[in-house]
Length: 273
Image: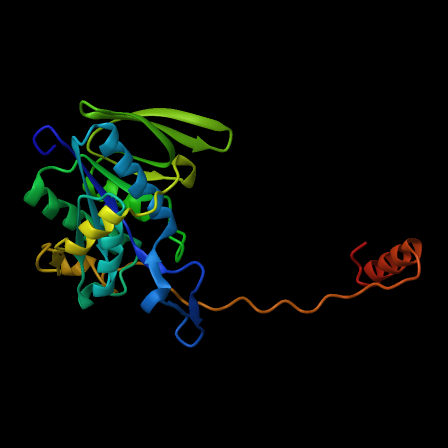
């Protein structure tokens, strides 16, 4: 808590825009540059929920946006501030490049600790359920494990929070679980939880004036053995585009019955029936 204010950190990531991304087959990577980069769509719901909690508590909450990436990722933090985040923090360092989900979680835990030292203990960390570039959904739970706090993923509602506890509704295949956790905690939300807002003019002005602290591996006191490519236990053997689909076979015929017979004959020829 920061005095009597709840302290929320929302972890956001700058990823390739869902509507305009390019794949480099030579490198096996998604290329992110210029206006192709944007906030991971799933993180928009986490940010919105953090801001809604702040509004529900009548301003008695602080929402800090946190990201790990290149200096260009500052744009995503300003986007977060324009939508209601109180402030933003960027961890950027070439030494962190190539970090897998576990190394990323290690870096974020260190950054959360630094934010806590600067602004007061963090009560809640919010994530989107996954990112649109790797789709693992692992970073949120890994942060909770390394931080040593409770974690729930696939949350679609946060009806109660305060007094050192939070109640959540977790989406399941056969219904909904209602769970209560002590704070601090980590929560990963699904898109069913809310509808992200559009930045207001006032929000955009606040974002433009905001000072974004930029931290490197030394600033967050990162363990060199647990960051970057060298500190990542995951190995990506190969990435590639799926092969293009071959053209289909057109079944012609004068009548529906004739077309049906030709289709059956073709399926039998292919030994599918």
